[in-house]
Length: 297
Image (cartoon, rainbow, N blue to C red; front, side, top):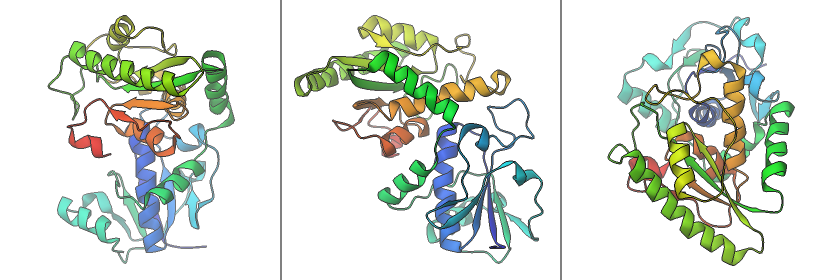
């Protein structure tokens, strides 16, 4: 077995965590290392000692020739020393290391930073499609889609409001202004979809704010949402460790539902990147904040 390892430890949102798997895979491939996906201390599980990855996704032993370790053994293995923490490198050196794919002599590298370096698009798609939901989570996706969208053309909308979090996009707009922009884009895309399809058009909304959901319901007729637990206005992120596995399943179901829509309006965040990467849309996805630097994600 390969005795050189890259341990990718992440505890951010699921979109960023999945994006980091792609970057870590790319670096592991370029440096001939086994990739270890260590999602202990996850934001989505109350027990910080548990590796969250196998709680969400099916087992993996390799992706396109890169060996993968992602099960509960990650916390019990003794990896060869010395262990070098990539996340302690100076920022400029770290970025250059990733850009060039430069290897380091240490047999084990560990990293808690995002690894947002990406192979060509087709390779990204192969990597991320190899990461499959556990059967019970996939069943929730399929059942909701069948119940709500059978025989329909679906416009997916991802609106990350933040609910008090400081986001890197959309900060110059009020909630009402953002929702009005989304409503205009919905009207345009629903018209396009109606003209090109004989099926009725339905709008699916995934958001982190009850206030945002209520505002969009008043502006966009017939919006469909999933039942989930919201938090009080201004109190921050939707998905929290205190809510346990249910919170993670809610996030994953919405992420994978967005990927199966016919059209997409998206926030410039890693959450919607999965849908944009794997979806097969009838029209080009539309950004809520096209002028943001995040629109290039």
